[in-house]
Structures are given as structure tokens and as C-alpha cells.
Length: 228
Image (tube, rainbow, N blue to C red; front, side):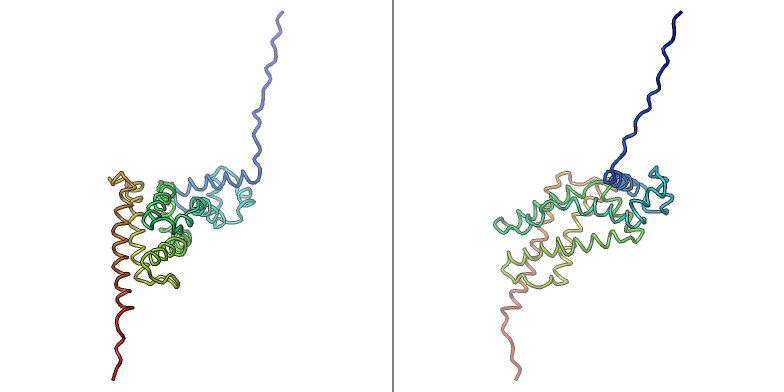
């Protein structure tokens, strides 16, 4: 008589994640969720959508704002930690070459659907992500670019950029940013040669700054009229 060998049920061992890996997993899942659905709902709904309990989520992120801050750091700051400041400030290379290289690196980092959707969603909800990022762009990128433009034009590099200089830089930077929105959010036709788009935008920006620098030089050289 044949005896059937009992079938042993082997439980699939669930790999226990370290605290660091678990935290990283939450940030990754939250990033995808925010990109697709925005920032609505509280932590209970968020935990449910992430497939975890609310107490477990609280263990790693005491509030939804803490999780949003971590998403901001991971999605918006980490991609820029690639030596871009050195690219902009290396005066042994022509300014235009530096700016072209920087914006090719920068757009490689931000031109994707997830990055842009989170940015736009956070703006609609009035969250701090936009304010944080706009402040970073102004202080770390545009101010640096304008300082290098001043140096290249033989102007003093000390002091804050003027309102006129900043507005010119924002128009230039914003035009490049909106190229990404049109392509990845609106899915509208764009010039597919991104490097050429950046080069064309640089032509306009540098020409505008050149005229601004000439005006500043003319004002500096103008004789002072003495009353009397």
C-alpha cells in the first residue's frame, strides 16, 4: 500500500526591512502616490493607500508634513547634488559653455512626469514645496548665474542681483522649465532637440544681459552734473 508523502507547506519568508529601507520604501511609495493623486487626505487615508497601518507610518513620519519634506529632499534636492555649483563657477571655461552644460544636467534631473506633477500639485494646494524650491532656485542657481554673467561682463560681482537682473533670469529659467511642462504634462509637440532649445534660450538671455550690462557701464561712465 502506497503512502502519500505529506505535502509540506512552505511559508514564504517575508523579508524584514531595516528601518532605513522601510523609511525609503515609504518615501518611494508616497512619491508615486503624490505624483498621481496629489496631496489630498490625511495620514489615515495615506497609510491605507500605502498599504500600511497608520501607527507604522507614524513611527517613521510623525506627520504628513514630515513625509512631504522627505519627498521634497529626495525628489527635489538629491538630484541636484551633482556638482552643479562647480559647473557654474569654473571660470577657466567660457560662460556660455558652463551654462549650456548646467542646464542640460539640470533638465535631465527635473524633466520627468513624476517631478513635474508633484511640483504642480503642490503649487495648487499651496504647499511649501513650491516656496522652498523657488527660493532655492533664486538663491543657489539664478543668483550664481547672474554673478558669473556680471564677472564675464566686467561688472562688480558683489551685492545682490537687481530686480531687473532677476526678472530676466526668471524669464529665461522659466521658459526652459515650461518646455518640460509642455512635453511631459501637456504632451504637446516640442522641439525634440533639448540641447538646441537650451542653446536658443541662452542666445536670448545672454543678449538681454549684454544690453543690461552696457546700460550699467554707460551709467557708470556718464559725467556727474554739478548744479550751480
